[in-house]
Amino acid sequence: MVVFVGEEESSLAYARNLIQTGERVGITVEIDALARNASAAEVRARLDLLRREDRTHGVMLQQPLPAHLSIREIADAIPQHKDVDGANPTNQGHLAFGSGAEFVPATPAAVMLLLERSPHWPLRGRRATMIGRSIVVGAPVAMLMLAQDATVAVLHKESASLQPYVRLSEVVVVATGVPGLIRGEDLMPGATVIDVGTTFVHGELKGDVDFESAVAVAGAITPVPGGVGPVTNVALLRNVVKAAERPVNAG
View 1: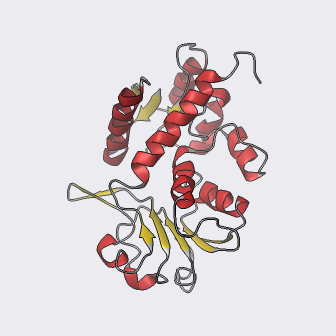
View 2: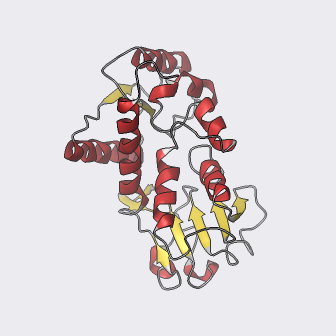
């Protein structure tokens, strides 16, 4: 079940794609829509209802949330053992401590699946830069790369500069929501570039990387659309299967 607050366009596109992917593999994905002005208490109540609903094996709170809602006020209400996007603080804590999170967040898991198939895998000893520090993508990806023994720099909107970090990195992951932030001239030749950005610009979905200039420099690069998004769907549905197979009395 995808709990959806409001009508954010790129999030709706993601949810529609997730429904279609679920249909292809035999998993029913439903959207539980709440009004854009829903309160934190209303969202928490809906999540608690889904916690007690036996027919629902996986629960995901779609982000980003409307500006008046804080994920920090709500995340602990996501049912821990149905938390297929790994947003509950308990699951995030296990991830941070490297102690076996029950569910790895779907988008960070997708980034790692793509990196496993890149020219720079394994990451041990590699220089990597994560641009963006959100608890949804940036921070978990940085932790997952660290767990693979990469040397990781984390950059964000308060960083004085993206350079020289990006140009020195063999692996660059970008998740800022700033279309075209990274161009080919910013990159080390041959770098692996994972673009997590999804922003609608004049009705067209754009990534955080200027693909046309970057593809001429990168050794491997993901496009937008068609890159991280489809793999994220697979990673999320893999977590749904894991949750469905979980023994009833476990935990």
